[in-house]
Length: 90
Image (tube, rainbow, N blue to C red):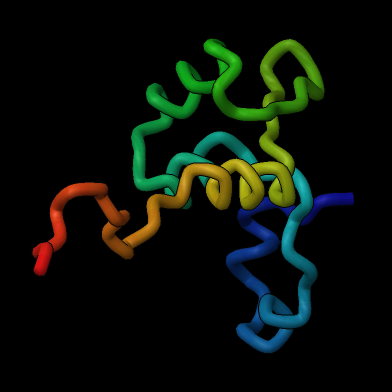
């Protein structure tokens, strides 16, 4: 059974650190991870851009593992790519 927010607030830091990370993330948490608004996160789910699980009519969750994979697929390399014809010829 999940811990309610008021119960979570009363837990000691050691107890919180010992708790496992949730496998299914609320939209608010997902939005914070992606640094976007909740509305943007909901739109991404509605467009099928973000994987999600509907638990009930109002309960929507994003699987943590799939969110991490989604982020990995979208990482942009910081290394410049080689473009033919841009080097000096001798």
